[in-house]
Length: 377
Ligand code: NAD
Image (cartoon, rainbow, N blue to C red; front, side, top):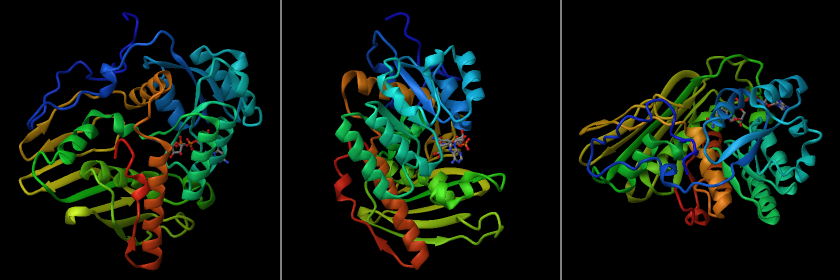
C-alpha cells in the first residue's frame, strides 16, 4: 500500500546494512510485515518523560498504529497533548476516569508508562476494560504481581506485551544472531554493564515502594535480557553483591549499584553490573574464536557494534516505533508478541533471585523451566 509510512524512517534508515561477519544480518523484522488498512488507536497512560520524549514522537512514525488518547493526572498536560497530536476532547482521561476507556472504539491498545509499582493496577484495569496492553519494563515490582497481570489479560482475552524495545533494534538483533547461532564459535563469557547517572534525589526511582528496587530494576534488567538473548538460553544460578553506596542519603531506600554473575548451561558465565552513579552501556560476548560487542548497547539510538572480524554496520531505527508497530500487527493478525507478559515475569523471577543472592550473600539456583516455551529468548 503506497501511503504506509515506513517505521524505519529514523536517522540513517536509508544507509545500506553491511554486517562484518558471515551471512547477512537480519533486517529489522518489521520491514517485511504486511500493510493494513487501518491504523490501530493507542492511548498512553502516564505522560511521563519517556512518553513525552520517545513514545509520543515515535507514534508519528508508526505505520500500523497512531496516538488517539492520553491518560494523565494533569489536565493541562492532556490539553497540551490534545493540541500537539490533534486528539479528540473525548479521548483525554484522568486516572479516575481511566476505566471509561472501555467503550472507546478509538482506542485499541493502551501503553502503561507509569512508575513501576503502578504497572500492575493499570494493566489489570486496562484488561478489565477489554483493551490490549503494552506495559513498560520492569513489568512490576515483584513476580506475584506479574502473574496477576498475566491472568487478568488471559481472562479478558487481551494481549499483553512488555516495552522491551531492544528486541526490535537491529544491533541487538545482530547480537542475538551472532550469539545464538554461535557464528564466532561457542561462547565462553558475556559481560554486560548498564549504568546511568540517575539524577535528582526526590524522584520515584529512588523510592522503594514505587520503584521496587534501584539500578537493577531500572537499567540492570537490560543486562539480564542481553545475556539471555546473546547466549540464547536460560540461567541456572546467580551470585550477586551490592556495590558500596557513595551517597547513603540519596540511596537510603534502594541499591545504588549491584554486580552479579549468571551461570548458564555449557559452562557459560555472564558477568553483569549496573549502577546509578556512572554512564556505561556495554554488551560483549567472548568466544573461542573471537568476540563481538555493542557499546553503547542499550540506548535509544547511536548504538555501535564491532566484532573480532570488523565493525557491525547496520541502520539505526526508531526502536519504539518498530516495537509498537509489531504489537499492532500482533493484534491485527492475532499472533503472539515476541515480548509477552511471560517474558516480563521471567525477568522478575531472575531479578528477585539476584536480590536474594545479594541480601543473603549466597548463590541462588533458578528453575525457569516454565519459560522454555517463549518464542524468543
Ligand atoms: P517519569 O518520572 O518521567 O514519569 C512518571 C509519570 O507517572 C509522571 O507523568 C507522573 O505524573 C506519573 N505518576 C502517576 N502516579 C505517580 C506517583 N504516585 N508517583 C510518581 N509519578 C506518578 O517516568 P519515566 O522515566 O518516563 O518512567 C515511566 C516508566 O517507563 C517506568 O516504568 C520506566 O521504567 C519506564 N521507562 C522505560 C524506558 C525504556 O527505554 N523502555 C525508558 C524510560 C522509562
